[in-house]
Length: 115
Image 1 (cartoon, helix red, strand yellow):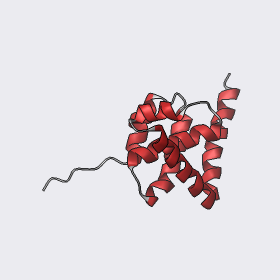
Image 2 (cartoon, helix red, strand yellow):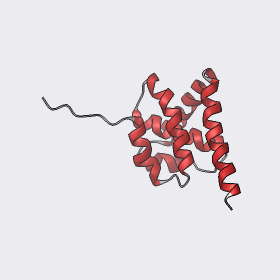
Image 3 (cartoon, one colour):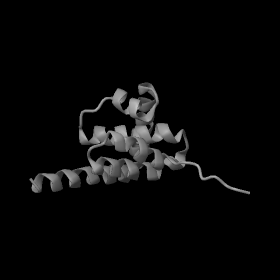
Image 4 (cartoon, one colour):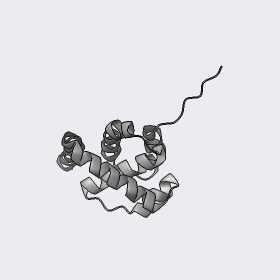
């Protein structure tokens, strides 16, 4: 019997998020977030979109829920709901938020020293 591998939230993150994320460190931070969050279950596309929006918000980069929603083919409300779920989980697991923030800070430091 042929077993078909289902796509994960990480697959969707790079497939759809790669279309709008110009900063690879944002994708890396969102990927790290999904490593912990995907164990909690949920729609993999929505989780990927929420993780990317969470990373953008931590970096304080302007991107709208609508832009992410359009890229992932879901509603802006779904993006917001999943970002809030991820933010809540990050407060439960503080090391997760610190890790994602450190990835973002490191990328900002590297890009400012390379200019």
